[in-house]
Image (tube, rainbow, N blue to C red):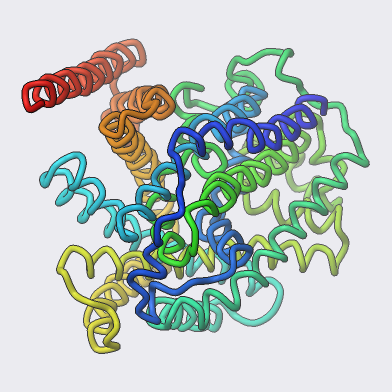
Amino acid sequence: MISFLLSLVALVVGYMVYGRVAERVFGPDDRQTPALKQADGIDYIVLPGWRIFMIQFLNIAGTGPIFGAIMGMWFGPAAYLWIVLGCIFGGAVHDYVSGMMSLRHGGQGLPELTGRYLGTSMRRALVVFTMMMMMLVGAFFVYCPAIILSGIWGGKMMWVFIIFAYYVATTMMPVDKVIGRIYPLFALSMLFMVVALGAVLIAKHPVLPEVWDGLGNWGESRLGLKQPLFPALFVTIACGAVSGFHATQSPMMARCMKSERQGRAVFYGAMITEGIVALVWATISSYFFFAEGWRQVCPPEVAEAFTSQGRLSLIQFFDAPTVVNIVCASWLGTLGSVLALLGIVAAPITTGGSSFRSARLILSEALGMEQRSIRNRLVLSLPVFAVGIALLAWQIGNPSGFSTVWQYVAWGTQVMAAVTLWLCTVYLSREHKCYWMTLVPAIFMTLVVADFLFVSPTLLGLPYSLSLAMAAVFTLLIALRFFLCKRKQAKQAGENQ
């Protein structure tokens, strides 16, 4: 439990100290923002700072910092270090610099920024890649909350239709009409869930595994986990530590800010808040799986069903959504459980809606279509909705198949994180700023995604030692390319003077 409290303090201090360092490196100023310069009443609209923070927090959260943190803690207390260090020095810096780059470049999205600094080929690849990711995320975050909501009231398909209709509204309507009004309410329910569960954790003060008890793969020896800690932990916990998905969401809020000086609170602060969500659920997972917590929180019939079946391990019998339902019901009672579950549901619903909106914006930039006209918004949104409906229908018919696809999405999110961090590094280097702030996490995330590509059974499935060596060589080549390009540009700049 001490590791949890120290981690919580570290995240708050990280925002106050390293957040200011990142802000000083980037150097926000008083120039006119896109919301003022390019105001269109649809996507470029000035919103109050607190609303922007709430929207950004929900846009980036989803179920990642909840389900991902629960599964990430299966590897053991090393998850604490990844959440804290990854969030402060990786994810929050990633979100801040990429968000500020969008703010400084007219609210441009990730593919357009990539094309500006990493070349046209990378831009084209990112357009296709991010569009695919946005539609997969949007479809996935329709059915997931529908299942949870049907457990409270109504049927699954009823909620599927309601949620998708909501997605249509958030994609098509001006940002201040639906997103700007509803998201803050959803954020309050999400924050209630975090605060309530965190308070119960502190009050119970259970004896839990600490970081100094060992950083090895606890899941392998205690839970029957088959995956290696590196790189699997760093892909399992994406939201809450480092996630490239965030770079697709930040431009929406960059188009609503009246001052660059709001950036630290909006981009860096929202990521730290998400890290706290992940920290709370990781600690609950540690209690549930490593401290026999499941015996205290499970209803007698559920505990008896597990002990009598004798075939499945803890992590096979109790998946992440089941843990969420059981813990909320046990710790918060009926009313508190409903409020907490609504907070958990709010995250994927808002993230899914924002994903479809992001897809429209990415397409509009790629095709150069203005978005003031409802006709243009409809032309771009219809194919997005059509693909989303097709993916949703396939998911409903093949629920286990979509879980397999989601493993690729999780890896794809971290690929985007690596690309975004290299993008930020190139930008900071060209601006003669401290590029090491993003270079170090860029190198680390490149090693993670390369190793996962080589070693994961769902991808190439190579032997562990070979995959790690290949990933290290690949990462070294990428880093060398960056320094050679930097040297070449410096030489050209010197010759032009």
